[in-house]
Image 1 (spheres, rainbow, N blue to C red):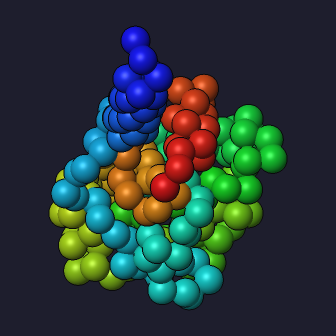
Image 2 (cartoon, rainbow, N blue to C red):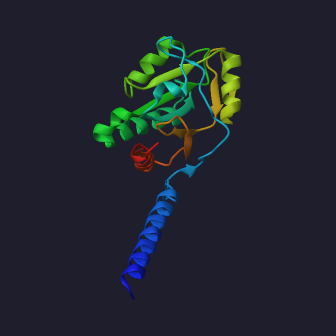
Image 3 (tube, one colour):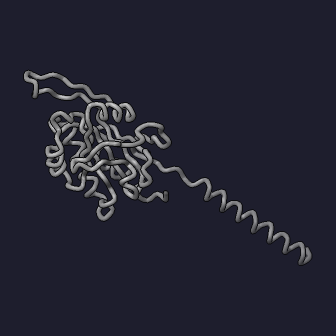
Length: 203
């Protein structure tokens, strides 16, 4: 092989190697989650509600953080406090990265869950968590977008009613895109693993 042909061969190999690297970069490994992967979902797009401090909110407000959203009510005896306690545990498990986790609690009982009640309730778990509420019409619109169910169940007195509702957590990446759904009972470790995966992603 003469020198000219050798140079051509080396150049061709370099081009192929470069193309291979480019293709590898374009086909980056898909994230694997412990929860249900809902990447690309066309629902649960935003939360146009007001927080317990009276500030209008949107998912975009939390850019750079992984956001976990849970629907419930403060007088819930078991599912809601368990889920919020697990979320607080996830934040602790993340260590320094815990500051990049935003917990959001959306009340399905705005009649009893006033801003003051919600603020105190969040304080039971983590003071950085926010509770959101809206009027009946706003809540219905958000619930429809999130595909959640909630219904008032009458009690013995007008104020002793309870609420049936869907139980699960919606997890958004740092760019505000819905990525994972965690069913109730999945546990703090599974949720922490998925939050950690999303925090490591390049957006």
